[in-house]
Amino acid sequence: MANRKLGRTATQRMAIIKNLASELFWYGRIETTLDRAKETQKYAEKLLTAAINSYEDVVKVKKTVTTQDGKKVEVEFINDGTKKLAIRRKLMGSLVDLKEIKQDGESKSAYNERTKDAKHPLIEKIFREYAPFYAKRAEKLGQRGGYTHILKLGQRRGDAADTAILEFVKNEDKK
Image 1 (spheres, rainbow, N blue to C red):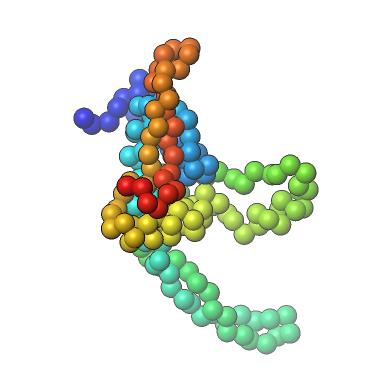
Image 2: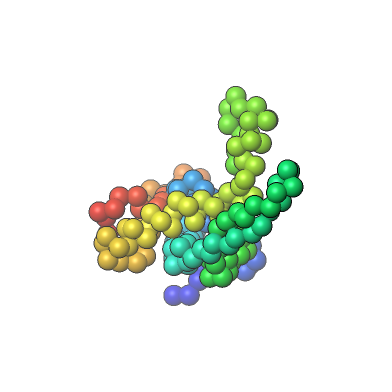
């Protein structure tokens, strides 16, 4: 079977899948219809596999920086390698860029201080949390893929559509 049409045109269908995949990466689990969950699962696992294969590709670069005193100091930066940069750009084009949410009781200045370094928090979350975790899991279990699973919930009350929860597998012992 090719792609499920989901009763939408191609652009609408891809917009739904991108939004659902972004929410899945941000929250770790989503509740949706079964067909949408299956399509989102395929899409998200391909993106995560690409991130896992490239997350360790970094390059150390030394740059000479002039301080306020007028002294020249050599500073070392860590940049993305070519492979990781290409995958980062692919992820940025394939997902909706979600922003950090202001927490309850958090002042605007505290929020700005907390989020000043993260230009693309969703992409950073994929490379810093998901990719290392699932790379270790793949080494331990000796398998690639299987990063998500679908739990069927039954039929929705209004239109009797089959609903499901799509979530990332967090237990390292599961297959």
